[in-house]
Image (cartoon, rainbow, N blue to C red; front, side):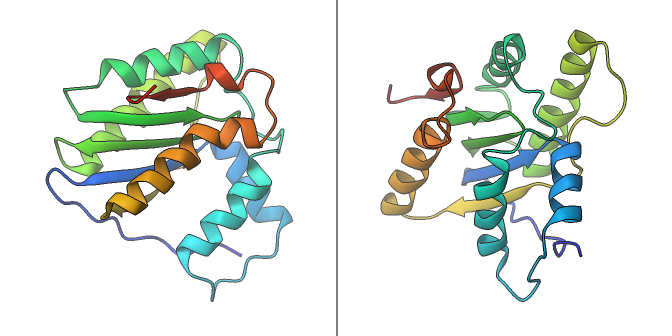
Length: 172
């Protein structure tokens, strides 16, 4: 019962849509849901989002941690990527950017640096983020608009009371 390992597409200046999750939330999801491994990775991702958007498991991205993580992600703008949009959900993050360096380097910095920062703030240690992440290159203007709106409305759709603090977008 495990989602197939996804291959990551790395392309200079690509617009990437990436989702990464707290380790605890993904372990819970995998243990408590039957996963149809014949489904495409995109369909598996959508099914996960439906459940994890409202799940409390691994939900540590709340309160001051939202601002801490948002500032960290913004601090990497123009260095690792050109940030387009980000939504910080209680147990996962959706982010869209134009990559300036290889995707693996971006994710290593984003997940590694934010893990240290958040663990220090929460007085925790160990793995914060699941080691995997889902990425998809945004290839068309229509896909770009749909992805941007998805990220923008994700916290509102999950009916989070602090939704307005969980989103950053360059068009807002």
